[in-house]
Amino acid sequence: MSILQILEFPDPRLRKTASPVTVFDAKLEVLIEDMLETMYEADGIGLAATQVNVHKRLLVIDVSENKDSPQTFINPSFEIIEDELVEYDEGCLSVPGFYETVSRPAIGKVSAQDLTGEAFELDAYGILSTCVQHEIDHLNGKLFVDYISALKRQRIRNKLEKEHKKSA
Ligand code: GNR
Ligand code: NI
Image (cartoon, rainbow, N blue to C red; front, side):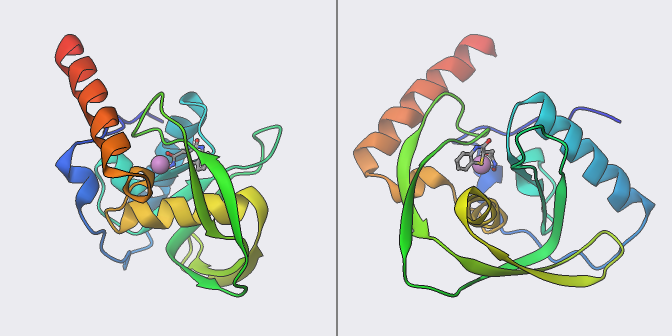
């Protein structure tokens, strides 16, 4: 297993739209294992393939307290099943150190495939719902900072660019 490098805002590769997964093979299994290891090592609750520069539609999530319930979603979609919105203080491994309140649909039906290609559905609410939507956004080249003011986004960009220069 290996720890993968996580791209950071404003890296333009985070803006790419991911393509559907069509091949369910051993290579895909290795990628999922590596993404889970990378997510746990970074103390994240989710990770989208886009963040590790793989532009395929898959993501991993573990919202459990004991970090022992990994979930994998391949070719995921989220269908809003209620108008209700919830606010969460969101962070992102690709925007390290910054948290902002984002409002999203509270409950939705998630449809996806597992690593064998089998389709499944689940109703998502709470942090799982927020996290799935945050991760699907990544697959579409979208980041949580796109939901906040341009001024705040620019401040975050400036700070991260400064840090990237320091460590370059
Ligand atoms: O670790 C993460 N925490 C988090 C908190 C609130 C809303 C979304 C998230 S996802 C984030 C990991 C990440 O960047 N996934 O793309
Ligand atoms: Ni993120």
